[in-house]
Image (cartoon, rainbow, N blue to C red; front, side, top):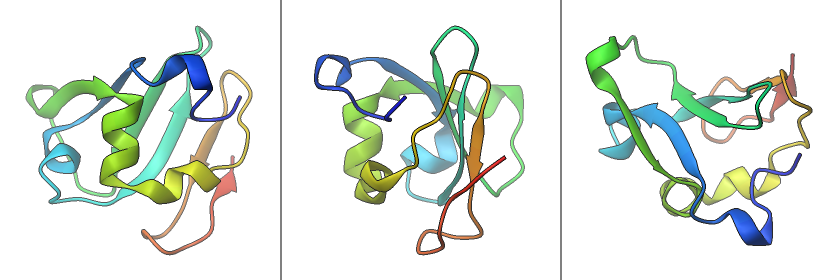
Length: 89
């Protein structure tokens, strides 16, 4: 599934406070079995750091997510850094 479909710009995304504040790069994107997105970084985080924003907000933080490979439910894409290529695992 592409990260952004036209009708999903306001779909919620689970992420971390560090990503929203720009303190961490997005290095892991997971599409769960229910079709929900998790966008995480390389920094350690606790449950208290988790936050929710929209697909549109995440794309504003990192427009390179538009180039994310298509993921099937249950798949994860990872990369070493913001400018590194994505690998589906």
